[in-house]
Amino acid sequence: MKKYFILFRAQTAPATVFSILIPFLLSNSEYNLILIVLIFIIGTLLHFASFGHNSVMDYWYDIHDPNKQHHPLEKGEINLHEAHKLIHTLNIIVTILLVFLTLYSKSPIFALISLLFYAIFGHAYNDGLDKNTSLSFLPISLCFTSLTAYGWFLGSNSINTFFILLLIWAFLTIFYQIAWEGNLKDLYNPSELQFNMVRKLMKKVKLKNISIFMTTIRGLINTLILVLLSLQLGINVFFIIMFLLLTFIEVRSIINIHKIVINEDFSHFARNELLENFGKAEAFEFFRISTLLLLTQYWYMFIVIVVYGLVWFITMNKLLFGSRFGPRV
Image (cartoon, rainbow, N blue to C red):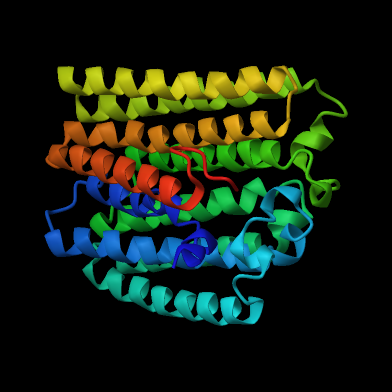
């Protein structure tokens, strides 16, 4: 079973769940325990299907990546044909479940449109754009932005400033993850020579300056968006304490990434250190936005999200890769 969890990239399943759940809760939706539970279950299956799909479609590239030779698909522990059947069947099942989930939606039409864009951009990325263009961050960022909109429309039919800021946050969060983190970890991958965006930018701009720009997006702009969102909800002391604490951890992680990068040390040890900080940066960014729930009727869900996220993420990383925050991918 372990090999399939690695194929599914199961360690980051909470990120997909939160991409639906947090917007749903922030949309001022009515309390619906059944829907919340369904989002956890279907969101997890969606992550398995979509990230497993990426693993399968990237096979012919990843077999040339020296950093992925331990993966079960590249190692031959999972048969490629069997993986195709499993993943594509799972995608069909999960899509049908997501469509039925919109029966609970406050705005079925907008929810279905968002789901359609999620599927289109996701397939465009997985089926080739992630490896055949230096702008691969664009379809995947739009993909998760659409998933955020889907979660919102499950609980609301309104389009307002809060919703727009939430979408911008979602886009920039994935932009940093793919355009920066994703390209960094593959910077010296021989199969990524032509379309690695960071590699192409380094021909014109110093790597240090690229790092400063990306660090500013996550550390400053994302933080500003979260502050603007909190001001619309009305802040309290507990929110301020938790937001500042999580922001400290988040900023420390992205600064650590910056320090490794400016030293231009991409040895095996440094790469693992990068992955560890990538994992922290992604986990705690979702925890940061979940602090907004402390300003709503769903304040207790903040505790659920943080506990569930940490327990799942750390346990999966330990079981699958022998690490805490850094999956060996």
